[in-house]
Image (cartoon, rainbow, N blue to C red; front, side, top):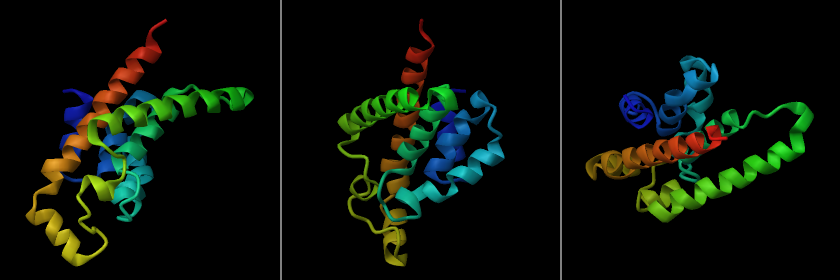
Length: 150
């Protein structure tokens, strides 16, 4: 099963960030439970504030895990990761138009009961969130494959 499929399946039980991070956890010797704990606060655009999409936030974490960061080469590695993250976000934004959860969900306010009802009634998880999780994983696969190339 692809990482995208795994993440989308996880999304039936967990939030967007948890699902994305957990799909890649084993690749970086990160336990699934730890990934779920780390990702829990990033769902709904960080605690349902609807800022940066949780799947995008998790993808940034995966890119960090893949960076090979070591303390002794901190600044050069940080700059390299920043560039990769900017490119990833540009690719995601090109496809989705934004990285903002609020905009992806057409201003449906997840912090209110009414907004959560709107989210469910309009099927926004299926229409917008699952495709965002899938896209993050597809882009991550592309970036991780490119990184492993000599």
